[in-house]
Amino acid sequence: MESLAVRPATRLAQPVVIGHRGAPAYRPEHTAASYQLAIDLGAELIEPDVVVSRDGVLVVRHENELSLSTDVAGRAEYADRRTTKEVDDQVWTGWFAEDFTLAELRTLRAVERMPELRPLNSAYDGHFGILTLGEVISLVRTRSTDDRPIRVLAELKHANWSTEHGLPMAELVAAELRRLDATDASGPVMLQSFEPAVLRDLRARLGESGPEMVQLVDDHGTGDRMVSRSGLREISTYAQAIGPSRDRILGKDGTPSGSTSMLIDEAHRAALSVFCWTLRAENAFLPERLRRGDAPGGLGDALGEARQLLALGVDGLITDSPDHAAQAVAELRIATLV
Image 1 (tube, rainbow, N blue to C red):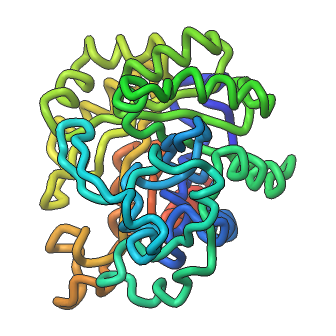
Image 2: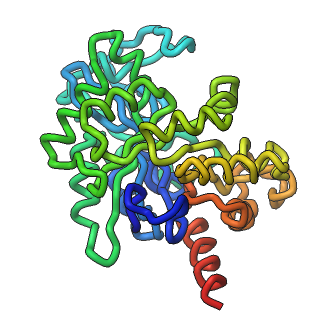
């Protein structure tokens, strides 16, 4: 995969497939099996979410609240850890990573986070433990070859909140990447976050030749400002890509508007690639015209959605089903050779 930092123009040679939390359409998210399968299915990057344990270790979970993706709720020894917290303006009740040491987190087992939509994945409940960011980086290094490099796109979750509560995310990430010799732009790790402050902090700590970064863009007012022409120029001072949602690009009904192509063109003009999140194959996540049947967990036309995004010029697809995105990218590659 061509490095974003050394690309000759604002576009990658070809779009990349990013396994969102691995391949959670087929295996419980953030498990070794999910990451391995994502690579097998064609992902060039795997995307772990990163939170922090009580003893300052970077671990991979979708949220710092653990009850949806682990068996912690059924563990009597941790019943007294259940609590309520306000995290980034949302109130959560459950068990939180920052209240457990790494050794304690190691005792927990992963479970399927959406069993009502992905019941087959529940067969893997209890089979896998919680990984550290370092272990995920080791996994991709093992799977990488000269012909097919694999990288990690690590999303830093609740970074400002963690820092305010005594677990300084940027400091911990910088130290871990240095320990792992993973601080180069062409190295095995890219970083992303919805929070500009942590990316700016890491750019200052690791330098202009440090890891490539993706500024994630939400669907609200903050995101609107980010994708303005001036906002994109500002992002280009510390990041190499933006990550808008598929709704921002395609609209909730799956019908792109003129502003969609303008966003992609403006990002490319600002020397930013565009990675789109998150493609999921189940009807529950697709616009009506791409659904097939009435069952929320039934599979719709995920391949059609991936083709549509690539036709608009998106540079990377963040997806729960890497096989669909990989097929769409392969089709595009063949079409460009004809």
